[in-house]
Length: 75
Image (cartoon, rainbow, N blue to C red; front, side, top):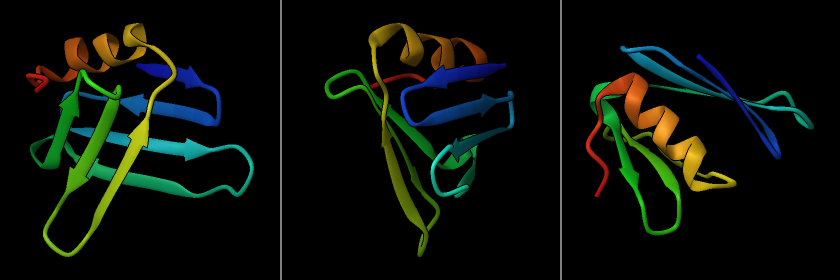
């Protein structure tokens, strides 16, 4: 599933999330096992030990799409 948001695209599969940014062509990738989602703040966060990143989404509908596709339980 591809979700467009204000600064890029989020590509979601049952195993992985990829965030691609329009302006600087940065791509952040993480396994679903390393992802946490937070309703408050509309944030997707990856923590794979020494590598950490987080993305703030534009709206709750985008977060729900990520949750539905991955099966992650939001906090």
